[in-house]
Image (cartoon, rainbow, N blue to C red; front, side, top):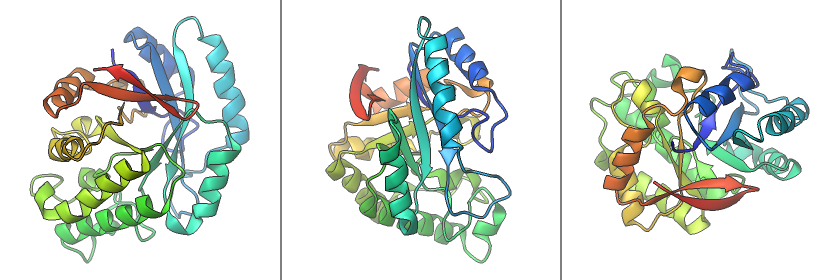
Length: 265
């Protein structure tokens, strides 16, 4: 079973699942290794508290590592909400704590999360998607506090028509720049299977983007389910495995102490 390097526990404001429950499900699935990556989005206005209690998080994760060390390897990660204006705070968090792996994700654009319909008000769907990619490009250009860019086309999950009218070619100028920056900086691209369970019939990002990343020379590729509850851990990983092989990948990437390791697909 492929290793799941994007999953959440009740340390995340949007999950009610104890970490031990997530770990037990991963063990049941036969995963040799996982990384818990709970949310930490700073300076945002939301009905959900996305600030991670880091002083409590690390001791709890260390205890779980010890408790389950004979059954599964647990890496300690975090999903940082990328925003240019808090670059100093992001660097402080990423350097202050001994994470194994850091996902950098764009959740809030112009102070709005695409999860909520307000993000799309006053814009066409294409305008909203283009704005998301414009901001994402600026953030990956300016920030270095992460190892892998999470769910690059996250915005599509929540668009008015989701991916019905979404085509990579409409945003290729921006997306190609994002991919080239990741490659130049030695950052990974995440294949997030959450897109499957959100009804897109594609991962985030879609196959065309994954293929383009490989064409451009991208080799660092992480895989995560974005599971907030146990039934989604490893969701459609076998489907993702075959899809990634078709995109030209033979290996995927896991991290330990912020260093990449390659595993066979």
